[in-house]
Image 1 (cartoon, helix red, strand yellow):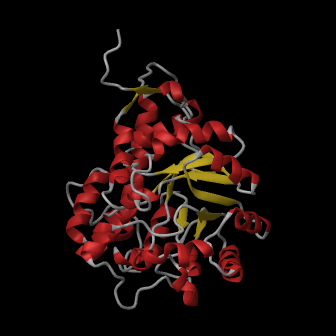
Image 2: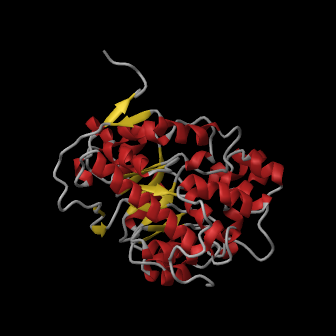
Image 3: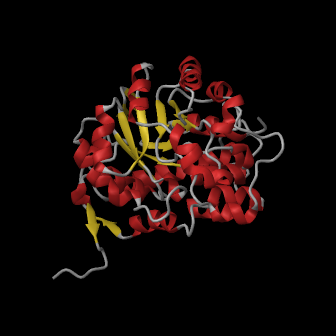
Length: 372
């Protein structure tokens, strides 16, 4: 790695928010990488909705409350986290920076953030784990060959990963028109190195015409989740849950936790924003398992709103890659620092000493609506 210390040195002047990083990343990344990281499916409506959903909900101010001893700590699957902001799995991070996932791992460790490593990482999962902190999870795309799936799981177990995150909402890729217009392809020498010979089984936009003939017959089903949960000692977390009935079924098939996610709008366009779906999933789960959420989170206030709706933690993807593209490990660290600082400010200004103080009474729906 060329970057080693997560300091703020070399952060461009004027970057004080996650939206600043997005703007700078758009000027830093080439057309190919920008289309991949910033694009979404079809007309990208869901991606926009993810952001807009947070803007339509306000926070209730509470004053003169005692804040001594306040903190942002949470516990997930028996492990303590200093704050509820995790790095979401994002593939092919070497597209953004030569240090790729190793830089992200170093930054996450320095900022006490959990890090979820993608199956489609551009570096070996073992090498990423060496650079990472103790709170590292492995995101798994189930392979048609159970032996291949189990091989990935065993490698993750041996390398010290603490959970398996199974992405369940992408048996095929979405219609990513922005990537298609840019003619997206991985540069020579870059690949999903952890899949090796199994890489051809990853859903490909080039093969969407054979969805029913090729992909769906080999896609994972509920019994595969049950099999996986029975064959690993690690908690199995399902990522991509948007339906309360699916949430209930997931628990019955052995899932230890759920992530409310629409894949950042990258699969089916016009899926609802995750923030609006979150409460009904939380209500159905009713405390039986942790519920995490991702999608459109760009401010510490967004994090607090998710916690107030019952989320155990949140995951952030695109802003991490934007920070990586702009300033390597330092950029990722800065993104995480900004979010945590903003979360603490939001907690202080709403009278929340700990995250458990944030409930739905903290939320103001239709904040611009006059109430008499």
